[in-house]
Amino acid sequence: MKKSDTTKIVLFKNKQVRKTLYNNEWYFSVIDIIEVLTDSNKPRDYWYAMKTRVKLEDGIELSTICRQLKLLAPDGKMRETDCANTEDVFRIVQYLRDHMDDFELIFNMLGEKATTEIHRTENSKGVPKLKADAKAGGNIAGGARKKLEKRLGRSIVTKKNFLKNTEGLKKITN
Image 1: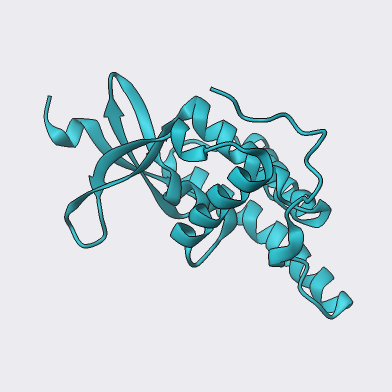
Image 2: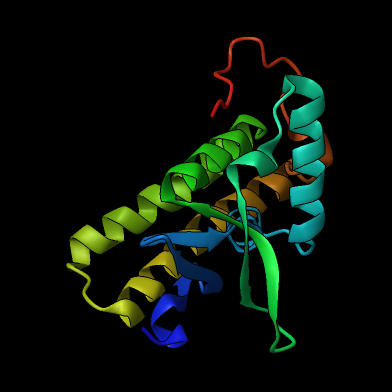
């Protein structure tokens, strides 16, 4: 099997998510997923802070559910990066959602639901159309968020939005 058959890039919300085949299972770059889901301009820092926060608050080491695998870096070299399989990506994403406040969850869900309904209504087929639908759904949620922020006179997305009380939340376990 050629390297090009086992290492791929997928697009999500117009952004690249690197993935690689490891032990006959796809593993995805955690940093790329965080960039897509959070729109962070420093996804590496976000991942580091998230791992630190979860360890301090819940005593869970998020990097234990990841594997260091070599993926093509922006400089064209193969570099080790935290990767997770599909199941573990969903576990990490649930920690992302656990640390969102109500507005962040609402606008995230609005974008997802708008995209899904556009797909269904327009019977979308093929990557270019699906990509356009995802962009449209994201624009709908982003526009609604901006309108609310303008009305409130402040940003609704801040560093303070993660949950402080996690007693009732399920903890990630291996």
